[in-house]
Length: 221
Image 1 (tube, rainbow, N blue to C red):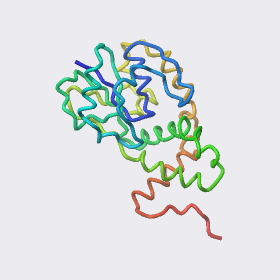
Image 2 (tube, one colour):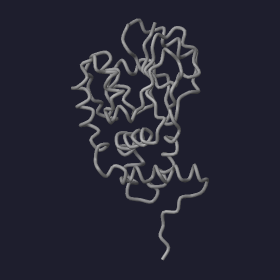
Image 3 (cartoon, rainbow, N blue to C red):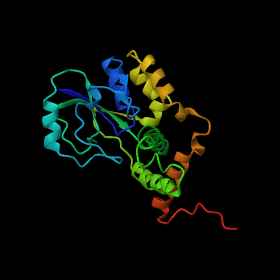
Image 4 (cartoon, rainbow, N blue to C red):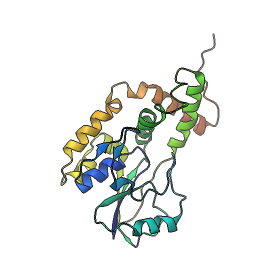
């Protein structure tokens, strides 16, 4: 039987695999994530929305290759997957606006900004347009899964160390891992986070999607 951490990218999958397996992995130098072997084991793909349309046969064949007893990670959303052979799932959800915004900001800071063409276009209008367009993918929630095998933890509760999350990890040696993660992602805790460029384009993206028109950010004089 298997124990899985199911999570969309940049929502603490590596952190949770470290805590639950009681290990302390290195920080990856190229993408700001935790370089955890366990949290990569059942990754058969990814996208910046919700990875729910995947090859089920490939997923289970990859799962069968694992013969350990620890927690292992996947980007697959398992709400449409038979769970007979799976013992337990920690499903990191982004059902709330705050969770989706936190995920988006982390992705921008750690993944998009360091890469081209984002890096070279940062001061141009093309950059804002690209950011707003990309942010639309992050509006789609990674939803809870209703099953007695699934523990659903909202990403914002992890970021903010809410009681539901702290109670879940309280029996593990978690403080060192959490302290390092919070320091590495200190931009999430700044007082003006909701006024940041990332938050502004996220709002613009949501405005365009929900109101079905272009966001007008120019002032007519």
